[in-house]
Every structure is written in structure tokens, then in C-alpha cells.
Image (cartoon, rainbow over all chains, first blue to last red; front, side, top):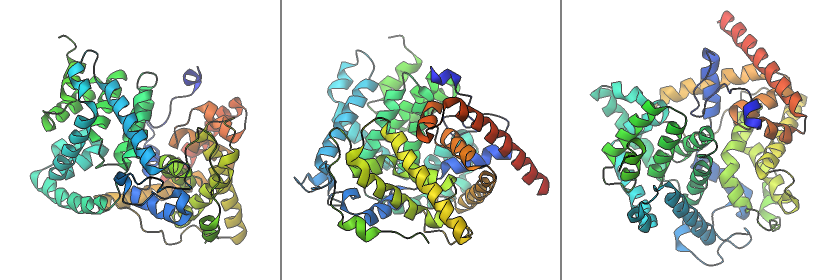
Length: 252
Length: 186
């Protein structure tokens, strides 16, 4: 209802200027890109007191009962809830009738996420740059790629110092997943936010699947296909590979 | 610098969130980066953004137990952030402060040159946004940067929907004119 009345935005769901705004579009894009990372936010949280800090800081997976007293929601419960959300989201992602994939949902999703981290470390520069500029990286020379790989690896070291935050990742992806049917632009925006906040997160494959689906829903099939091919080349054994192939070839 | 009350927060008893509401930690994780960003685009310089962001979440901490759900949590948070940003601007104006203080340490992107370009672009954008009146700026930032729907923008601001549409049009016109003027001077 209200969506139809709202004027077209100046930035699309991927943060690209949608009109001939010239430099103003680029300025706006830079303004929208300014999101603090996890380390920065944890520094703010550390000044806000225990209600805002992770229980046990680095022991989220330890499931220490009652460790988050006072927060209103023990961290262990939050993680379990988030993982449940993730499992639900994953099952929603799996194509109808794909029972084989459904039965192994959660474990496969986790191991797939771990595999992604390893692969992205090997090709860090390409992945990091593509997150921002899509096809731009295809034209890079080997030297440029090598230089950027080095830079990206250094950044990776810094990023790995940040505590993992699977719950926040899944909340964001859950929002993206829920928006897919009704508002693919918003789904794409949420996936993009995930890419920015969690470039080496545990659920990068899930994010990519949502991105591809959102692009298809928006009629941007060439871009969707490009990303799908890239995904399949990187993750031929992913539990999502079959789903992605079906998106482009619905015939059995 | 903005006065903070960190000790107060640390020592304050934690009010239990109303049933069904996420904890302060969960809210911070989910919305914190966006609140920080909206503060920046509403004129809070990078050097003070962390402090004002803390003020926002201190207010959340205090008021969460009384949140009645008449608005969405998201619009409620943005409304708090807008009030804090407005308060900050008034304080800064009284102190005749400039917004060029040394920024805090930031996570730097993989490419330092690219990050520098982005930083310059943001400074220019904020100068352009500074030319807008406060109400138009708030509508523009919530709609174009934060990607809220216009009914949500109206809810955050407590203004009629049509007023918000009008302010968005005005903001767009003014920004284009200011950008052209800036380009002409360059």
C-alpha cells in the first residue's frame, strides 16, 4: 500500500544511485556505507555496562547457564534461538521436495560456512572487492589482485580478532529471508548489510543465496546468473549448489 | 566533547525488558550500527558519535521496560536517536563548536586510498546536509540513508505523512541545488 506511494529512492537496495545524480549519488552512497564494524560496536558496548556486553565475551559457545544474568536473555539461549532461526531460514531456502538437503540442514550449513571462510581467505582480495563493486574485479590484473590479496589478508587478521557473532548474523539474514517474498529490495539491502558487517561471517553462503534470489525477484537476471556461476565455481559441493542450479533451470 | 555518564550506566540496575522484547544487548547488536550511522548523517561528528550512540542506548536501557509497543521497536529507537542528535546539535551550537575534532580509530577498509575517498565524500555529503533545515534533513536521512518507508518516517517524527513527503521533495531540491553550487565552486 504505502510502498506504491513512496517515491523511488535515490539509492537502490544495493546502495547504487538510481538516478542520474552525478557526484551527489556517490556522496550519498559513501554516507550510506558508513557502518561501524563489530570491533567498533563492541568497544561502545564495553562502555555501556554488562547489559550490553556479550556474556563471557568470548565464551558464547560455552553455554554457561545463567552467565548473562541481568541481560534478560542468557546468551546461550540467544545463540540457540538464533541457530534455530538459522535452521528455519535454511529450510525455507531449500527448494520444495529437496528432502535430502532438508534432513541435513543445520550441520551442513555450519560446515559450509566454515568452508567459505577458508576459501575466502585464499581469495580474500577478490571477495572483499566484489562485495563492493561486483563485476569490477573481473578486469583486475594479476599484480593488482596479488597486492590486494596481501592487503585483504592483513585486514583479515584484524577481522578475525573480532568475536564471532552468529546470532546477529542470523537475525540479519532472517530479516532478509523474510523480506524475500514481499520486498526483494529490502531483502537485498539486508544481505548487503550482512556483507558489510560480517564480511567473513559464518553464513556467507546463506547470504549469497538470498542475494541471488532477490536479484532474480527484481528481474536482474544477468547479475543473478553471474553471482550464481561464481558461487558454484567456488562452492561446487555446497549444500546450496543444487538449489541455485534449480533457480536457473527449474525443469527436473 | 560530549559529557558521558558511563559510570551511571555501569552501576544502574538493569530493568527487565517487557515480555517478548529483546534484551538491551540484542537490541544493541541488531540496531547499534544503524543508530550510529543515523547520528553521523544528522550532524554528529565522528569524534562524538560513539558518545552520543551511548547516550541513545542509555536511554533505551532506561525506557525499555516501559516500551509499550505502540510503535515498532525500530521506529522507537530512531526516534530516540533523533532526539539525541537534535540535543547534540543544540549543545554544539551553544558551544560554537566546529566538527573537525580528531576522529576515533575506525575499522579501515582493505584499500586505504578508497577509504580516504569515502571519508572525503562523507565530509562533503555532511556539508551538503548541513544546508538543509533540520526537519527536511531528518526526513531525507531516514528515507534515503536508513531506507525506512515513509509511514515509518512519519511515525518516527510524529508528523503527518503528507508533510514528510513534502519535506523529502524539498530536501531533494535543496540538496541538488547545494551540490550544483558546490560543483560550480570547485
